[in-house]
Length: 250
Image (cartoon, rainbow, N blue to C red; front, top):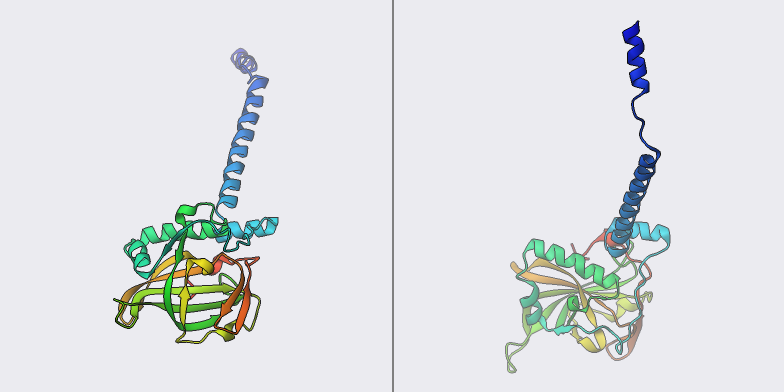
């Protein structure tokens, strides 16, 4: 009995944790929670191209808003012809293309705050396919054309197909816009007034040969003239669908 009583007494004499320990622990936990919350917020708001982040921003009512640029105030970027586009993008590895596409899409959704990534497509492109955009597409309202670059080897020969294909997205609410295009048409694409920015890079096969495919979207909005007698309004889409992915033609 005396030994048991002595043991209980020793246990009662064991030092208890001081009050400031619990205060310190609570502050450390609060600090960790603040850091994690801050990091998550930075990731969500800084990477709207991620479908999950975009869905969160939509629920919060904080979707990124595309700026309505005109040809007079678009961000500065390199205007590249088909040969220059091919030289810049075709040699990229798959990993490099994946990383670049994340940055290109993020830059588009953030109104090209990083102009070093901005390239405008130029040149002549022959239309091979046309279709309306729908709910299952990255942009749900408008028209998209698939066209191959046509390049003249010299001033005395006819233009021939070049291994660069563009998907040209026209965001518009005008349902008759598709009537202005036909397969076989040749589009003259210039930085001014088209401002067709490259937002995705991929590779395809054309006539059994590897080719570069670029998804481009105009970032100068307003009236787009088709031929001599028709035009339609291009307007920035109010909502995008990153989960649909790019390119449009898979």
